[in-house]
Length: 72
View (tube, rainbow, N blue to C red):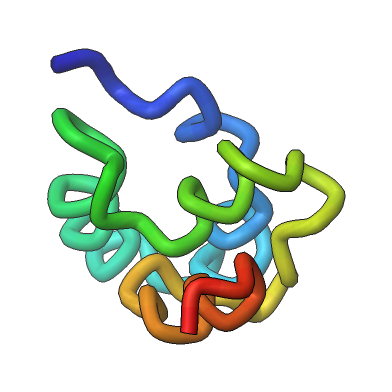
């Protein structure tokens, strides 16, 4: 599986995680490299587009992504 197409431009890593590169790399390994189907940010991006992804949405917040997508 390939890296997420958003890995280099994801605002989550460039804004919220900029001061924590070690933690960012751990999260990238889990959510961005390989299968990105578990990433809440990518879930919203895939359905609603980049502009609909909340800046404060963490990759692990799948329940929140489901709410945004109306999958309650």
